Length: 517
Image (cartoon, rainbow, N blue to C red; front, side, top):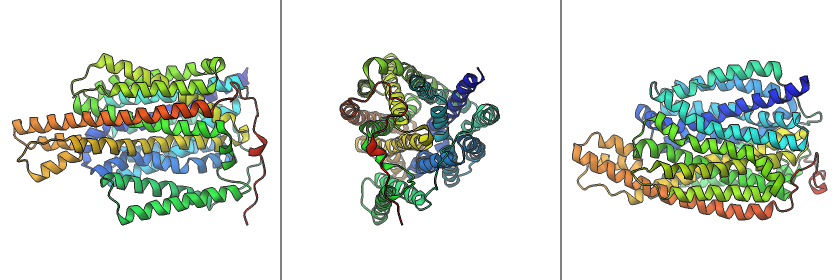
């Protein structure tokens, strides 16, 4: 009985930690308008403020997953929780955009110690395959619920306090995780961990950050090729190539690239990356739409977006039973098709919102995302022995974080480009007003405040119409990507067992690699 209680207690603490991390991803989206007003960041700085958390987290997830396998996942999670609390306070009180970017990066580094620990702890205590699928479904559901609760909690705070208050809500959650974790969590680690290759750690981080920097700078300059952009892309790509080659030659690789020979593993990681790519970009778009186009308060905007996240929780909870009935490939493909359908429905949004229609679109998209993430996460975990759960969960979560950050960067750039291309400002405006209005919708609203009423109204109307046009282009682009991924996932996951036994690795993935040096 004590073992059963500790097992489910572990799941509760893991879910609470993921709830906090997912809250932290979405509360910032609602805080963007107030943050922009208070700190006046440039468009590039704003992208970095939104993205740097995910980039820092993604760059270190694999390293931290391996560290947890070696020093103990409980120890790493508790250490990360304390660090996350301190970084949350630093973020809340950042006085300017530059320090806010640094604080968000530290928050991402701390998050990288928590995220792989949660899923690997769940993987280690739930050894029965059917129980594991159910537990991972619950874990995924809580993550989706966190995306919906973040805007509500954040909106309530933003209606009464300054933008930094949305990060202080982490502190009581951190305290609960830490003290409950001390009492409940079992310690687990790889009994034969080997050593961490210290060369691979900076190679992976430099590769990820180099490519992301190049992508973001190219987007910020309208796709113009500049020397520093080419240099960053070249350094990032070279680092990743060296990293991958090195992993194939190490006896104890940071990432076991042999796992990608398995269709189930590779397809699940790919589906996770592209699906979260679309989802987080849409979360940011809707947060701005509700506040800057429709004119709702942060709290009302948070409540309006809540059904999508709750629907994702329902989808995650239902996914286990659907997998046992239909199989993994069909459930993932169905999830992606539903998500694409929701995206296509968003292309009917206008300056004047008709919420019942939007509600249906959000529910369809949310259920689809819940199906996809729950099944792909479980498939990734089931592909490795529990001793390597930290490294495997880190790969899956790296795909999530990279997908989310890239989605905001790429689809956000599509939105910005479409907005600028469709923006039709009245003639005779001051040059500085035109420049600010063309930068972002928030900038246009701020610039309009300096104009006479008639001119201000014309600028705001033009900016809102251009932003809605940008949403249409963005969501249709996302829907096309998701439909292509649905077809690919259906074929890639064909033949994968509904219940993956403990443990069913192909011999090809267990072959001993040659040693370096």
